[in-house]
Length: 360
Image (tube, rainbow, N blue to C red; front, side, top):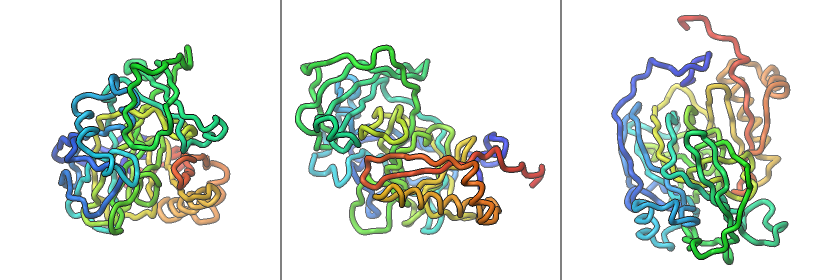
């Protein structure tokens, strides 16, 4: 089942397929939604590699720093009326040959490189403490040091009015720039806030709430070296990526991370040998299971039940043993509290399980 071996080393028995380049253009992105009726932007076979561009919808917070010609084309050619019902710019969808409902897509995230060395954090009207800040919004622009893999605040400004239109462009060269976080350096954690497959429903599905299809999970561990497993719901899977971040903490409290465009290299493998009901995350050190609901208590319960299923059905533990293990070795945390449907996750260290004998 695992992409990584029990010792954390990557498997070498699966040869990569063809390499595809998927640029983000007005014709290869869809803004704010998943849709099972969308024509594929790319068709691949199981095992193929994809080098894709993921564009942040917050590039307009500092257009002189975060927009190049390719980003400007997306913002200018996709009208505001077509950016709904969610907010994220999604690259894709990618059609995986042979994928059928009930299969799993194993997506191996191999490399995530910033498109430019700047990002934006918006303390937004959907942030957790919006009312405590007198219902005012504020933007902090960060600069990334790619060599040190750290970010630091460049300046901040108060957002005029209310941030309501996805892809709003603020002309900050004429705004009141203020210093922010002097001397503080934030570890860079490039990752995708939103990725997933199309849902088996008619019409557009918002990118904002996470769910069984993936969507806006906002787990900063979904970066290079991680593997995500997404349950396929429609033929071909129709997988898309978006909402790139350079760093984020658990909770995403202000409503956003450090939002910044990324170039992402990943491999998609079609899996029919196992099934799982929700987006499953594997890192070199952890198994991480997610739960979602408008009620955080229910989200935590959902994560608990799916981790119980992972340990019982896939790791071979009895339910009683799995329940005990979750209590003594499972770490529960809040993934995010700002996407309407809130997220919780539980992680179990992979190192605690016995290694399989050589040759198994």
